[in-house]
Image (cartoon, rainbow, N blue to C red):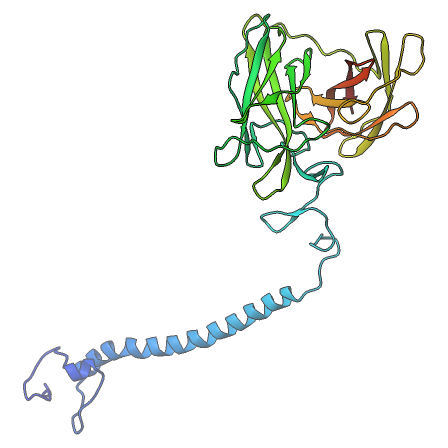
Length: 354
């Protein structure tokens, strides 16, 4: 057996220098040491070669990927795909464009930003919207007896809001409607110093009711935000819902007949032109009411979505024009308030949008 460099013999013993892969000068490496040395030194050599090769290949792959990415960034836009410069609407979280149908979504109204409550343009579906919350003080009413409705509007800091803009002659419009759309009240409450609104209520039929607060709040910075908030009310008792009357373009109340022309469409603002006549068929002498010659509210059957309906400030001859955007197909109930001889009357219509 050959001697080791330390002068001792060993069988299958690997020296430190052999493990390191080095041969001392003037010494021959024995077969055992060579095999052991190869076993120890081989992986190091292979790892170095593998690392060198991996770096070369990795560099090539990285260059290809970078070139592909730069090519995509500089590629011409697909003409079939809308971009920020070709599509209208708001940018969504995924970078796409969300287009609003005409007449829906947030818009301006008498200088204020209007915040709708529903994604399709209907409002009043939520008790909270745009940082404001409707807080009724008495959500349970007594059926068949006169009462009082009280509520506050609170901001996102839970403070009662006390600054409101006057819109259509009033700072607050409250609509109370039975869920089957058979009962309707248009009220104008008064506000106390602490921001609590109150208004008398006549006797209500038993059942489920819904209230809407339609207002324009004035923020701390002076900005105005128009919001419609909704909340459910209850008048305990036997609730017997009534079917919705058939669709019609005319309605009679107290000897006056109100009729309209125009066909509402989904997602498009369409004029509805109303004409009110007396029992003799002559045009009724309408008087201004809430800043116009009439006030129109439209509610959707089912979820009772509230629609903003904007009147023209002046009449077109004998007609009063309102612009309505139907958010979707279905049945709607329209309530037209008009004033003659100092008395406000309400004509009711069922409207079916295909």
